Length: 205
Image (cartoon, rainbow, N blue to C red; front, side):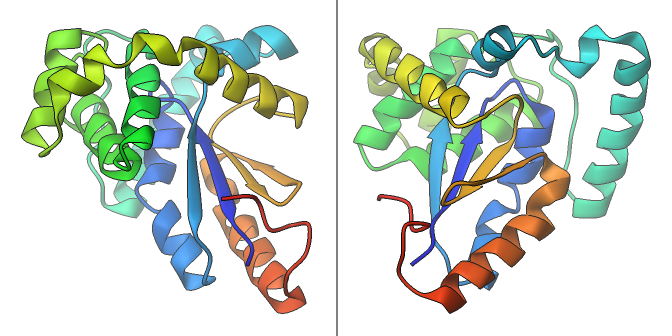
């Protein structure tokens, strides 16, 4: 069975948008989603790419584009009071949540807090409260985050080695797609892989 790998960073608003519909897209194609937090800043550094907000013309357009997408998808999107913010704690804690089998609800809770409710998810106390409110053990997940530093770096490097240059990033086998607006192509690739049957395009669980 083909698997949709979804690489994302909490600092990326387009990854937030993708997170609100990636499960629906995969479900339509009969495929599971593998959620894979990574460090977008590390990808930019390795590839020489730059965030849109660092380029004035792109930054201006990005605000309009994000508003259009939020309205199209029917989801709230409000820039955090502090942007850009450091997503590192939330990303490391995400791997702790993954180890506990809670990565998907964790991810949704953090994205909702940061991009809908404008809460400071870089603050350990705020992140812990957000997770606790979502029914997770916030204090334990935040406390467990530091040892996942190297695992997060390794996951980021894997994405870079596979051709990453931005986020959200999707893989169907080794087919790569970059951007929230590429999910239609992702769904087509998943359907095609399903029709072909088992093969190397089925990512490991």
